[in-house]
Length: 308
Image (cartoon, rainbow, N blue to C red; front, side):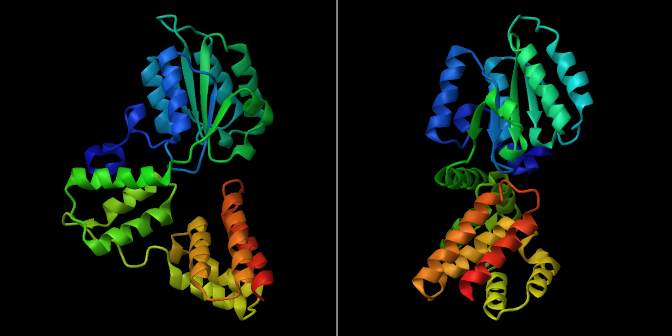
């Protein structure tokens, strides 16, 4: 059944299969040669390969490990029972043990402080690989005890991975569909998992059939026109929330679509430049905020100041 899901069928099993930047790849190649692993913290948006890379490291080092999803077990008891219990014992072969703590930013503050102490106390025989979507939700003492990698898969690497999968599956792709495929990848990037799932979704009878509009530019156009017409903030926010289905409730896609739409407009260059810079700033902050809708709407408010 897993082979029916391309994200599982083509999940990387080795470091060379990962879509990584050169510096990150070289770092881990050296660590594998040395047979060592420091404490690590992987930061990235969902679907960028954090957990997959953590498991590749474990397999490459042949280490015994404990996997814990911190979004499911987020309290201090998780650290006391699951992490400390595993860390107190040595492995059968005397090698290092590894704790993979997925979505560490979901841990409570007390749990993170307990984790900090555990990392320090059992550093002789245990290494920690932590993953998180938001760096600002990880306390400073944990960050200072880890080597931090912001895992952003190179765009060209994502394109190549999709092309390889399409070739492996024998999917027919017309010239028109090639252009739409690039648009699809840009819309979903850097979430490679989402990209692969979308490509499989749009493969029908062994042929790629990506819809004409992936980024909902008509929705972005409507929001833009509402801003320029000086509609009230209440009216604009109500419209966006009530029509979230038009951009799959993904506010990063909404911001991207606004960026792409404004880019195509023939308006004053200073206004266009400032508008795009503002959107870019809020796309960056999207990775660090607790509420994506509020972040996107604050961007809309800033755009209103520029456009009107």
